[in-house]
Image (cartoon, rainbow, N blue to C red; front, top):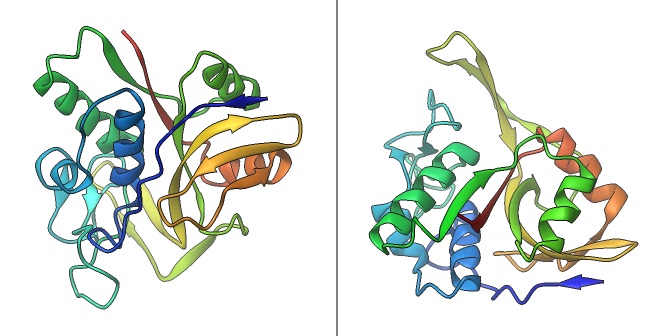
Length: 202
């Protein structure tokens, strides 16, 4: 069994839509940095004012401090903005020569286990309760590069901090999930495009 002592940090009440940056904060705290989730959200995370039309591979959509009742609520981002936030934070901490964020997107199950075996927890994207991925009724919108982005619904980001033969073990910023069967984890992880980020020794 692998168990890495990742500190659980809850996104609420300050960041009701800030699961991604809170998960990054957990990775940084695990490495010994005195990271603050709100400071990361406000000073390091690439963001846009509104979410409609934003490429989540480039910026966080909206404001993670705002819940869904707000017209400029926060929504989500993917690996690119999290990697950028981590790089900027590590540079400010004069730690870029010691650690670097890695976009693990596309990693298979063996690759994720290998990351844990090296002592590196990783954040990843799934659904709130590991139900099948669904899409928002708002539909989709075009991106500047010509791709169409279909908006996800009930998206969530968490940290994987351990594994055994049956389960992956999680630090969930909403504290919904503590473990999930490996087959279900991989199913939903793949539905979300197998997206993950780790911070590894440089």
